Image (cartoon, rainbow, N blue to C red; front, side):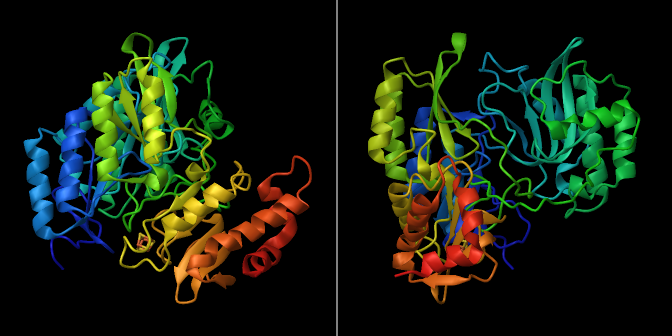
Amino acid sequence: MNAFSRRGACPALSAPMQTGDGLLVRLNPMTGGLSPKSLVGLGESALRHGNGVMEVTARGSLQIRGLTPASARLLAMEVDALGIAVRTGVPVETGPLAGLDPEEVADPRPLAERIRAAIEEAGLAKRLGPKISVIVDGGGRLTMDAVTADIRLAAIRTDAGVRWLLAVAGDRENAALLVTVEEDAARDIAVAVLRMVAEKGREAHARDLTARQLRSLASWHSFAPPSVLPDISPTWGEIGSFAGGSPLAPRVIGESGDGSAIPPLVGEMSGRTEGGTVERLPVPARLPIGIFDLAAAGTALGIGLPFGSMPAQKLTGLTQHALTLGVTEIRLAPRRALLFIGPSPTACHSLPQAAATLGFVTDPSDPRTKIAACPGAPACASGRIATRDIAETIAAENRDLLDSTLTLHISGCAKGCAHPGRAALTLVGGDNGAGLVVDGTAKALPTGYRPGYDAARGIGRIAAAIREAGFRGETTAACMTRLGAAGVTELYRQE
Ligand code: SF4
């Protein structure tokens, strides 16, 4: 086992990870954003040393793949020469508009920084596994609701001022709420949770803590439940059980849901997911695509990467164009997008046009945002079908099929990197071509096959039947349920 194939290692710049198409590195700038010149420089490095494709992951990390041990070292040197300080240690993530959005409840960056410092001081980074993560969410328009984490802190307004809801193990919808506290206590409890996880070993996560441990954490600091819980979903309403002094959340920590629907924008394309590992139902949240008025901070323009990737030339071309239009910073956003900060009002119209021409996603309703597709063949050596081509065809021809109730996973092989969880429809490459799995994962045995080159036509058959059989106002998911798994498979196989 060499340094580039360690299981459980983080594919950071200093520790690339072996994938089907060479080594992969994943990086996040310390400052949260990059200058346009830095992003152009990174793109040029990716072209020189990698496979020429740049990716932004569901958690908002930048990925460069197709590296060799030697080229990965050169890339690391060039990143250094560009002056890009990359994040190391336990990820403590904030939202992509942190500190800029006038609608956020609180700027989460100071608390995030204090937690980072406390983790460092406690020497926890080397005792925790590489997929442990902390989210500090200041609220606002682009929240981190859909991103899973071991610890999540969300700012809320209470009569007493800003407080932090601290929850563990999950996304906003399914994490177990522990306590509502002030900033100092939030930091202390977050670090205490991490200490407990570290004591369980490097494979452990917050979901492995016992209810007793969590109760002790919750009672550590006295707290007053907020008098109002703005924007708190019913499942977060577990705070009520604390007010009553009852044990922790009714949900068992570590329990996984049935994941019966697909979160299209979770999972990664690296052969392994990053950060939080739970892949669950999507939390309805605004996509970071479109124009965001930041009042005094100007404007942010969100542009998505189709299926999370783009040729480096196109990305650098767009970034150079953005530089001429007054963009001062580019932030990586969860859900596979980039936020261009600072364009002039005129640029907010011309930049999306340029981006759309290059094939970027500029409309949040773009059907490509509903499909999870790994690089597949030929980019990944394990890929058995051309996932991205199939995905593009399906998105172009069946926009109406991809309503909010149904998303689609297209996987080059059974590994299912782009979406480890269940999907309503999964196409998976294998010996027999493109197999169809209905309501399952890429690892399940397909119930029907078509040649890989013809897979999009199979999905087209399903879409045509739904158009024909669907009742007025019926969703795709509801119609598919009526058709049944066997019926859907039969449609997929139809000539
Ligand atoms: S799922 Fe896709 S990216 Fe992952 S190993 Fe298979 S083909 Fe490669």
